[in-house]
Length: 423
Image 1 (cartoon, rainbow, N blue to C red):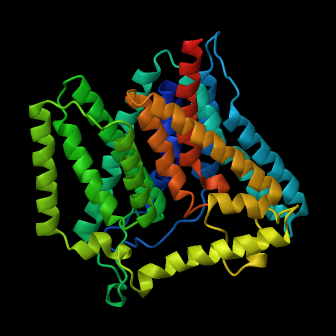
Image 2 (cartoon, helix red, strand yellow; image 1 turned 60 degrees about the vertical axis):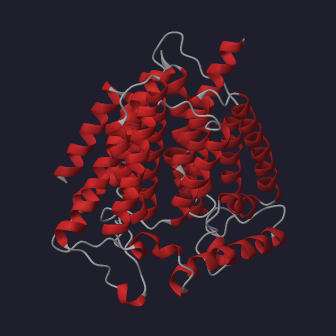
Image 3 (cartoon, one colour; image 1 turned 90 degrees about the horizontal axis):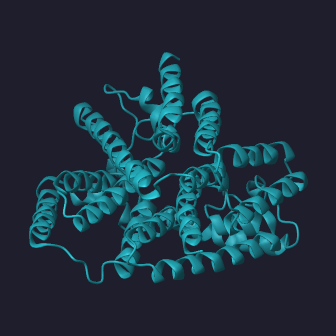
């Protein structure tokens, strides 16, 4: 309880003093609150903690209110509605309506309340905070520096627990590989925190290359985060990151301007990282879940089952959907494991229309980013959204997609600022 109170007070004060940092802490509250669960003597990386009303609920709501209030406290503060605002608003309206016709209205309304209080506010608050920043790029850079350092701290803690305790996967003899995380935290949100830190580090490296500043410390941090991310053995996050970087390469790095000194540092660092992995790391430890054996392939088969089940449910409930918590009634799976499938299952044809409109808008954002590909901030913000959005096709449910809403808030804030400056 003492730990919870200290964390609560510390994050609330941070939200007051530095709302940009406070927002990052709130985004990672699931990891932070579970630091008290760490056990050196008997660590359990597969253990997931129960929900925490104080830190997981009250703190997030209060923190987001504080960040929003401070971010929009200026007399000339502005907030312009865009497609994402309308998309999320219509989603909430459909959740309310579908909750009323759900097989379990109480559970459905609780789900809708979580979406309203703990999910979509990350978009509205992030967008409002950054739109009204005196210097968007400077504040975003400070936010990313903080994210990198926080991710490194998470990685160091997770690695030290495993190293000091001599942790071994209990079911290794059955082909199960270790998934590095902090006890009490599912590997996916932990991997996403590390992945966002890595993306931030890479952005800062490129940005410093342009200004001809030293990047050595950032390179070491990025290398460390790569190793930690690989040890999480979280395929969806790794694939999301790789795909996002490929898109970034196609948009921005066709003709990178890097001086010889920086190129040498990057080359030596990359080779050193590869050699270190080959010498000191068992490849199966970091790529075990990519192997197509019975254990690694089982979750992939479940995703296909979810696809077929969702299409069947959609066709049977075309005009009404089944509501946000009724999926287990119609399927042996707990939920669709897919952002798009959830819309068509929850809301029927109305969800399909919303997803179609979202697809058109995302395509438009890609076109705008491609036209402004010389702007590293546009490229970074778009691929950060991609990083989180791709993972939504594999895991989580609508109210838990904080990373997507946060990244959309960043992207739409920059989009709005640039649109305003053109006028």
